[in-house]
Image 1 (cartoon, rainbow, N blue to C red):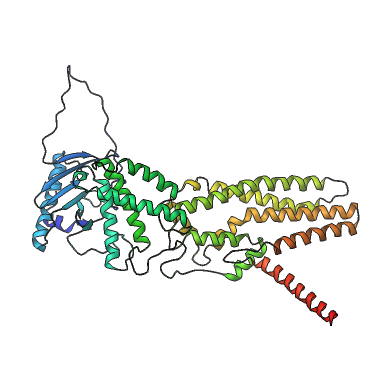
Image 2 (cartoon, one colour):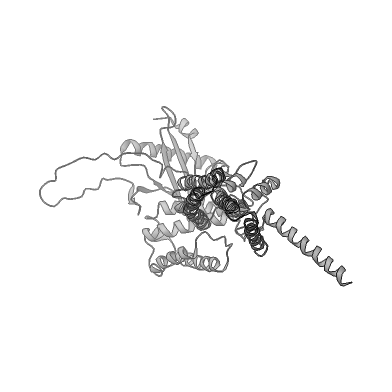
Length: 486
């Protein structure tokens, strides 16, 4: 066991989100035994610690020690572990006296042993919580950066971060404090969820973290416990919801001078990487499709945040489109092969549509394999994916181009197949009839592009060029008509 001096040096401030609760890789030691005849009496070992079981199944221990309560997930029924924990508690008490810190009456200490970081050493991770002010605190100056709490804009913003960490602690250790919690936390949570559900229903850019369907489900569960005494199971999920809400409040600068009220409006200037020249070229070559994905991806990843329902809707639409394009591109592939087998047809004219259709099928298949299961991904997974996919030099342009390839290549294959058919028709019925058919198809496509304006943040350059030519042609015709009238 390390000396007291070394133990003082190895007290480590942590937060409730950086413990090893879900990261421990320990195996159970299972065995068979023989029961004695008669009723089996349960013998509870005598200990100064009280044991509780979390609703998820995690065993934890609690003890009242002097001015504060202590909770830990260490197995203090083991004498060696209990002695090590007690030695650290003595060190913490000594530190409190040396620093002259006055602890609040509703104070609670969390400790966690970490004995596997350096040989022959042990570290005690710790933090204090105050159930009255609902915050965490430590015995020494602690950097919010080292604790991975995020960037702050004010003291009240720090209070929001600390309250979120407090609720995470209550979620992990609810069984021994549920009797001391006021039922108002449940009533206030129901009010917040009702407002959030209404906000989601009436605004497409709400910053509330849960969808209206999820809010409705949660409200039904919360209403079942309304007006009843809080037990540990209820407090566990109430604390989890409060933690999620406070985390979102922290991310959107709730209660600050410049709070984020719109999901699409970043609360601070962002380093937007844009290459308008390359984007215009990509849209020109790929039929303006990258523009759609570029806009969607930027709206999904505002201020490094992703709302899971918007992500799931986007990726579901993409995968559904890619699956449908596999069928359509395969149809074009078969049609091009059949046209090349007609009398007086040229096999060389079929190579371009066959290549484009095959490329559409290949790119769509790869994207479907790469994005398998993304429809059910969490917000954190989506944020990591988009953060990795966003190029530091090109932004979301490369990903937008990749997402556009199946559809754009299908359109190219369809156009090239029509050109192949017109070329074959020119050999069979003559160039004049084939040219007439080609002009009709061109005018039809031209008219569709003109009469379907885009309501996008980044208008399609190809459509804009075609529309400007058409308007110039109309103005020239009007001027000519005016001259004739005069």
